[in-house]
Amino acid sequence: MTAEDFPRPSDASAPVITQNVASIFAVFGLAASLSMGWMVARAGAGLPPLPFIRPPATTASAEPTALQLVATDLKFDSTELRLPGPGATTVQLRNAGLLDHDLTVEGTRLRLFAKPGQTADAPLKLDKPGTYVYFCSLPGHREAGMTGKLVVGDGAAAPTGATKTTAKATPAPAAAHASHASTATTQKEGNQPLPFTMEGDVKVFALTARAVQWEVLPGVFEEAWVYNDQLPGPVIRVTEGEAVRVDVTNALPEDTVIHFHGPRIPNAMDGVADVTQPAIKRGGRFSYAFTAEPAGTFVYHTHHNSASQEPKGLYGVLIVDPRPGSAEAQRDAQYARDYVQVVSEFGGYFTVNGKAFPATPVLEAKTGEKVRLRLINLGQALHPMHLHGHHFKIVGTDGYVVEGPPLVKDTVVVGPGERYDLEFVADNPGAWLFHCHILSHVANQGVEPGGMITVLKVS
Image (cartoon, rainbow, N blue to C red; front, side):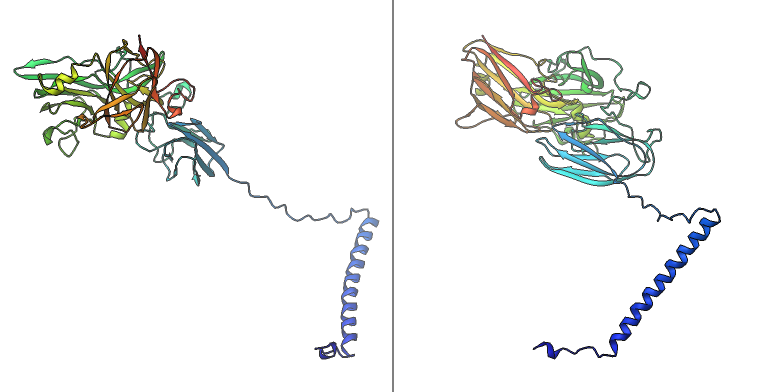
């Protein structure tokens, strides 16, 4: 194909184009002349020229304010967020911890979920000013301190659907949270032996559940819901085969129950509200009766509104000693020391027996002594507990004797509700740590050392 194959315009078409272009320029020229003449005429009359009419300014739509929150283990990096006023915003949750976390804002439908190392975000529209509460809704996390407030505008109006909370944020004095606990507890240590009385051949114990202010560190008090003013509650210790009755009085601001976790008990005594019994009303009482069996390390705790009540401290230890003369009783006689250690999260702290290091109790032993340590997790997270300077044998699990050769370790991972009986010989003199090996769990509000640390002192 060559240039000859393309049609050429006829000679008659060229003048038409030229005339059209000329006409267009003529029109523009006439318009320009008229405009110039008009401005000259106005100037001659002493009038200003026509003002230049600017197009209306286009206002760029402002990006919605973004709210960012970082979650670590049982802690947000801020307990107060602010927005200048109602409107649209974007909320971002970054999980820099080792546990799953979410972010829920009361009175809204917002719920962000992020696994460790992940970030989640979503839009949030707030139609009115007010103070909104945000928190992690995973069991025990809010109660352990993962909560705060979102202040929109002046924060004066209450958001629809929002409920009251015991947020850890420090509000103005006039709006300070009124604690359920009016005074600090007189008890300083948990796991104290619970006295009993005898009614015939029945061993009778009394527990009262109420709110107190618990001293988790010297001078640091947090609201706790506890049994007999202790965190953990008192140790109930009985012998295998004994008839037991536990009389429970509810002095809490809401209903509750007690579940005995691990031993063999009648169904009616299992302590599950609306399943095996009605909840114990405020000011009410209930008696749990059972025969203590088998021998082992067990626990008791609330089983009503559990995700809120248990992390506040409603738990304790039940020890069933073996029958006198049994093989287990003979084995127990070898122990020079018998310690109980409950790990948990409370009030934003990682605790051992209700205290955070350095307030945790010291484990003492003399060189050559055989020690049993009853290790119990009544928190909501996994805790790999590591002993320095010694190895231990796992001789019991969840209240039952380990059959066959015992497992020898220096670290054991204990999950929520699990119990391990650890045995070791204190054959290495000195002060040795026993601590959770999740390193953020050995800090107090992010400051090391603290949290889930105890000291084994071998002299």
